[in-house]
Image (cartoon, rainbow, N blue to C red):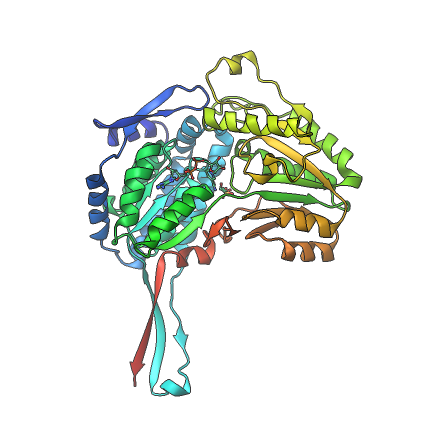
Length: 482
Ligand SMILES: NC(=O)c1ccc[n+]([C@@H]2O[C@H](COP(=O)([O-])OP(=O)(O)OC[C@H]3O[C@@H](n4cnc5c(N)ncnc54)[C@H](O)[C@@H]3O)[C@@H](O)[C@H]2O)c1
Ligand SMILES: O=C[C@H](O)CS(=O)(=O)O
């Protein structure tokens, strides 16, 4: 066991030296380099990791549960250090980083406790002198590829079911947030999870694609790929994984509509919108992207929303007054700024935009001010793409039929949200929305016990809940003559 507070980052830097080939990890709140980390750039290193993973003994289920239970305890014991590391490299406010550590830990606990079992099957007449049943077996070594927006939670909701199911895994964390991954691995090893059962290959953007991704996808010993990130990257990984017929889970981009009907509790809807839109500065795959508000309540909603946006505090996530941190990169800031500019040029109205202090402007950080746009139309780019930034974009509607059609008029189908007090409408619209998850009078929907995932171009498979472990298991059918 390591000590309770302090020193985890120092341990990480000592345990994972950059070596001769390295790349810099930056603090998005200042643009300055936090650390140099290993940049895996040769195929041999990836193949060696696969060899080690392929030789890992799965242990028995009770041992795996005990390791996960210890990892869970260590996560919570080190919550302050883990949160600090995530804030340093992802920019999110410390309070949100702590929330993420708790959320990530809840997946470890869930999968430590989950029982894995096959089933017995009643023999049909055609096989009447038999006994039939299934057993669940580990799928085999897993390649896990994760984004920077929730560096712990997105990784842990893959690693913990993979290990609970008896697999070894190789994590390729986002180039922007490898330190969180290394910190998790240190604690996993402290908890008894063998070094080779959870390996990490860190790489810059280019090597991630050209070396790590390519070699992992081409290796027949890797039997499973689980990816969270953009839809384009997911398509490329699916195509590569097909050549070695890997089992694949893809948690991809979204374009979540938030529909607020005229009978909704407006204060509840505004609070839901604030959480769904501004959590992690809008950088969540289930972030509210298109706000559809009934025209009768538009003005009241917009003025209430503007009041809440005005009190957001933009800043360095390490400052405990900050509620909106920086975006992950300068490229992200430029992308969000371009979306807002093109919306305004096409007729959207700027209702409110926070101003960034001189200090923040001079900080070198990647800040974008919280912004509220109205008069947004479906043909604008901002409604067609993931904003991934702190911009609330509002449109109006008049009929249920029209708004459901518009909400579904996207290639994506991850999350959707609706607010209404009409119970029949609530059921009807929830069933008609093309999404893997629907929040009803609620925008905080993520939990380890719930199956997370999308339809259409938002992906394949589910994470969390009992569905989540099936992604890491094979079902073997047994037929015994009696
Ligand atoms: N669904 C999500 O949670 C999520 C997360 C991050 C980004 N995004 C979306 O993607 C946009 C771009 O962000 P990004 O560039 O960080 O996302 P990305 O999809 O390019 O990268 C996410 C992760 O996948 C890795 N990756 C990408 N292509 C790969 C390949 N061919 N082989 C191996 N690894 C590969 C990256 O190194 C990173 O670890 C964002 O603006 C946002 O719209 C969505
Ligand atoms: O970005 C992906 C998910 O939205 C993160 S969470 O599971 O909702 O926290």
